[in-house]
Amino acid sequence: MKAKIQEINNNSIKNRTKKCLQIALLFLLSFTSIQAQDKKAKDLLNQVTAKIKSYDNIAIDFKYSLNNAKENINQDSKGNVVMKGNQYVLNFMGVTKIFDGQKTYTIVPEDEEVTISKVNEKDDNAITPSKMLTFFNSGYKYNMDIVQNVKGRKIQYIKLAPTNTKDQRKEILLGIDVQTKHIYNLIETGKNGTKTTLTVNSFKTNQPLSKNQFTFVASKYPKYYINKLD
Image (cartoon, rainbow, N blue to C red):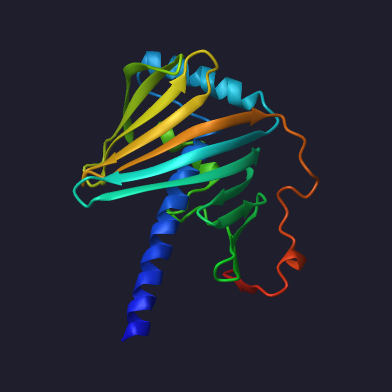
């Protein structure tokens, strides 16, 4: 019975980690391209997109927070990601995720396991760079929202409201630094009261990257179980 309970707890943790990774990717990969319906919002987001596309690569350190007052949940985590084109290396919640443009390598040191999978464009639940190119183009209503002063930085928020009534998200707020035209944070509020916030702590561009930056090297994980899904 104890083993069974432990298995259930482990599955719960893995599911939560998977969800957190999807939210992180949703936020971080939204740097690739954004469009909006509201003209003012669209103009601002077009400036953000143009600025981001001008960089060869981007390196970000970020903070992830999950809060639900009703369930008394308060969770904070930190992570980092390096992106170039549609390739990326994400480190988050003890898991490393590498996308080389064709396959995704999910490395979990706690389980000593590497999962290798091809990108399935038909999987609606998969968060991939190519999907982020059209993520903001449909399924949302866009409007300019509040402006906040954050430590001397002027942050303009744009509100995204899902048009699908079955969507469990009530709204998404995308914060943009008006001066730099960089994304500052993303706040997602669920209909159940859960709020997740991703905040950029460090934003660096055009960094010197190694030739194998986005390459999975199996020899680095000699004792790991390699799980090939495709």
